[in-house]
Length: 259
Image 1 (cartoon, one colour):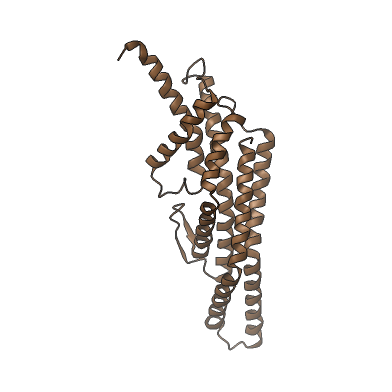
Image 2 (image 1 turned 90 degrees about the horizontal axis):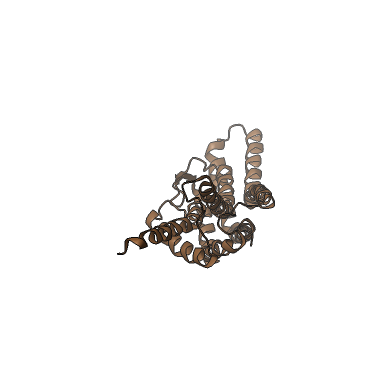
């Protein structure tokens, strides 16, 4: 190897490293890619495969002062921020489904029936995990993982490296979208949750009318049975609502990417 080529090789490796930051940050926060059971090595390989060609096409150059400098620091921070923003917006869509599951579980009296979610590694209720897995399946069925990669690649044209901070309009849209996701989660849970509350009210009225009746022996099985039947009836409508939320999440991710 010619010693004169070493600086060129070093610059190329630095470009590759910087090119992996944006997709790598997005994959950490995004659904599917950011799951705890996805190996870090696989994320790095996908980030390399996505970021390096996008960087080469965008004509990105290193800061004149180098990476270890104040401009280099802000360069890296900008890449991390835009990547996390894109992935976080998509994650909020799945969080709405998880929130709906938690609300329904508490209404059914299954708040204690929790298990470890294999996607996030956190503990969630049984119904919450069911709706979370449904949302993940719908995300993959709609090619959401491919759309995410397309958004990341397109963001290099709209927000070139070195100028990758989201606009104030995009930040405001992210905040508004977060509030909409809370409302969407409650909307998904409302049909089942409302009927279960009515069941509990009826059990309370029956308990006042017949004090000798053991409500624990009657109320809990009745609530569980009503919840299971309602879930079976409402699952198609829930799936449609979750699919709309995921579509809105992808649109919000495009907004964060400036596309």
